[in-house]
Length: 122
Image: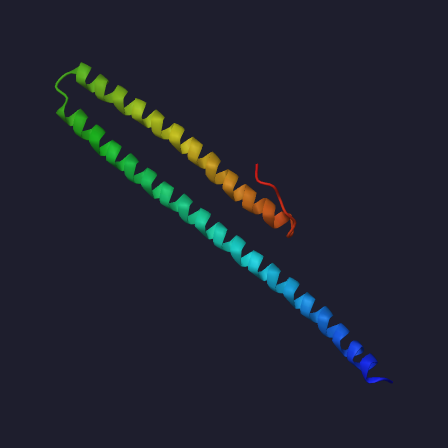
């Protein structure tokens, strides 16, 4: 057997394993990247809910103070109406935030299910 033929036989499997290893590393890198995205999304969700709870607590405290300082029924009704309006605004913001966070998580999940294929962002 000629030396040239021997070299070709020994490098063909090496190239296969090298490309196989490279594809495996790409998968691992993609998985790590996706995991980092999920962690970032979950941290954002957690931070938003903590902020929401703090604003709810501040609003309730303010409402309690206004009720305690009310001297007449019209003052109580005005405080109640203002609290109700602010509460509805917060609920609307929460709804928009939940939709946004769900879209982010679903997009990341779609990328996982695509199994490495490109998924367009809408």
